[in-house]
Image (cartoon, rainbow over all chains, first blue to last red):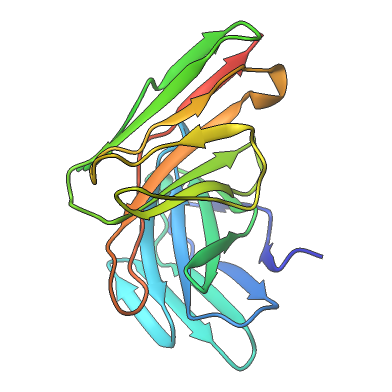
Length: 107
Length: 114
């Protein structure tokens, strides 16, 4: 069993839909990262959080430390949101990555 | 804007060749990392550095070496490439400091070894 599990693995949506991607982890952490990887491979850091909730534009990330669970929400999804979303947890300055959730948003 | 640069972006070479993947960052970050990522798979740490003259092996044995002679430069070298080295290699950096900081990633170097 991986230390970081993401669900779903693949997700398709129509433009405008509300999207939720989940991340569960089994280790103690100091922070959790949400990353976005577009085709071509480049990775962008979306959020780093250790408690509560963060919001940036249409993206919202939440974390529940007691339940070892985080969610990434996308409101009013758009085709340009199509990408792989990766959850990574940090303990002791090393990151453990999930395998990612592939999101496709159709017009 | 990309403040961390990787070259080459794509490379196809024959078995046994020596290659160096370059990574440079202009942000003055102390911490730098090399990750390997196979298609559809998670990133694996292969090397990291906390500053000049500091290098450590990560979790994945990749038969590669790194050096950190200057803060901004963290090249990865494969002495003798094999088909099993075919993968994407991602460089990242972050600030040193109390608490965690976000990572900044390069665009990646996609290596194919024939």
